[in-house]
Length: 448
Image (tube, rainbow, N blue to C red; front, side, top):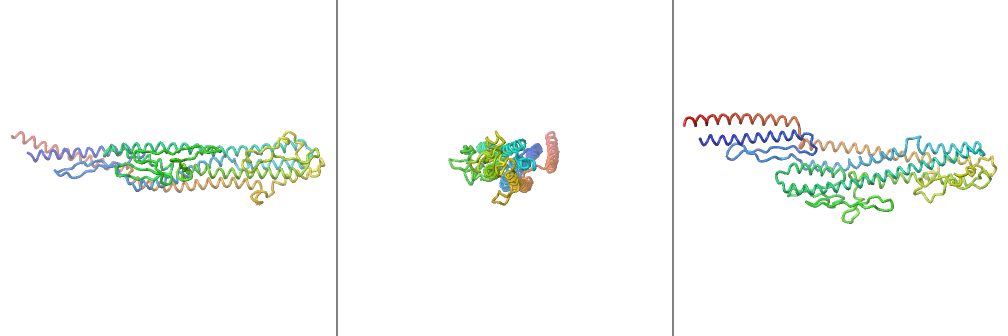
């Protein structure tokens, strides 16, 4: 009798174990598409008193592969952010043949028209009008570059805010995981997802502690999370442009944030866009200087010495935004200098101004104005394509590592279906065994 009762107890435990197996399998299937979910595995062992016992449920994770994913994500995110920002800059420059290059061509064409009829009021008005349009195009593109820089700065600030939010979440989860003990698998899934999001925004290092918490560092080892405490990255606006400077404990870490989304945005904001703006300013300054020098060598329609056609610029910096037709010339096109002798019908200076189209005055005397603009457009396009190609390459690495991780942690519908059938069959077999033993007990009890 004791043996049969013991057998019933053993079978009852077996039924409960198979039921838990079905529950764990059902949970895995339910979370098939849940981001960050790690597949659960039921741990069973032989009981000392016979039968089977449940030792717990464990999430299948590979810390090495998870760390490898976090190592690869910052580089991919950096190139993606850089490519997105440079793509906006590329659009801001306009289509080939319909931007500064077209305006330069029309501007020099207007001088050619003036050379054909130096006394024509219409031709002179056309020169002034094309000068205005050229200056406006320089203003517009300079403004778009400045806007792209400000947009990148805004995204940097938003990304830092996300880092601080995620760091605080990781710290809270550290506390919750320590309190939950063995029932912390769902919390650990949430924490791993937060750590992955962090690594996309910034290059972080993660250390797992014996108590289940994690420490997170950023910018070459500065603590972002230490157990239950998180430390915020501070953002201040630096003069003169008011761009964001990042710091921790009063130390500027902006230059240390080279990877992740923040790294790509900072590269675009602080290096790429200022370099493009510098090239644009150099072109505007070169055009104004060359035109003014030649213009001042001639005489206007009234026989007076020519003045400046464009207002004098203080220097290269900011030239594109400051370029404008001299107000006196803008108000009176007769002041446009076309003559080289002072005679009203002479066109020497008008021809010289038209010939500046092909003069190699840029880049140390190696490029024309059109060449200089083409080089700027090429550099932006090349940088954009390089960033896109690098992103695709990095993305492929991330995908491969994530596949390796998912082989361990991911939920496979085929595997879970097989597990479900296995636990179902085991439950049915144990149920039949339980029914048989119970029937034997009933028979023995009726015999007594």
